[in-house]
Length: 232
Image (tube, rainbow, N blue to C red):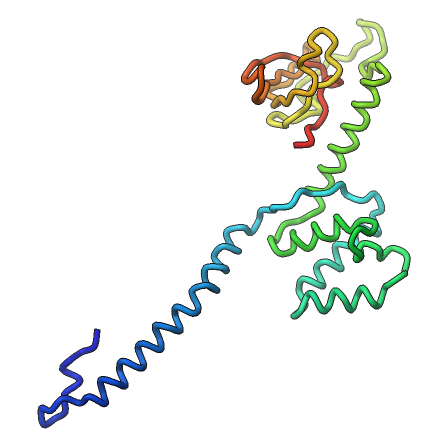
């Protein structure tokens, strides 16, 4: 609101020119503030998402040297003034060279490269997430193959030879989401999602709670071989 007393001349007459100048200056400043609001809101939204990811981590490639190249390339491109242009320059420079297919859509390890770019924007280390994704993939493949072949992966010695277990021997952490498989006594358990509650070393069983479905909240104890990491 304009200070009306400042709009009068010394002789007491009203200075319309001074009022017009005040209106113009403050209206312009208000509009400029409005124009910057979208950018400010976008920045606030971006900061709120820092430390989180919206994309699913792909399995970490097993070639350590390739992983280093992908991560360094993603960081350099992210820090450039124009990431899109810089990315195309690197693509053209390394086109057809071994180990650079990750820059091409659908190329080998392109999924990990895109995930690294996303993590750069969110300021998240992509490697631990991708390493966990690889662990999940390998665990599921092994458990599914064992279940299909009816292979028991437990200790093969006699009862007296079985070493005494402690909670430190737990291979699955509390809170992990797992998928049940290979339970012969209760086949309708198979395919259901459970959350690990606790490991019981004396019985070498995991106490798990079903998540949703017919057995929602039901708690049972299952062997490690009957639990594989959930793809959810």
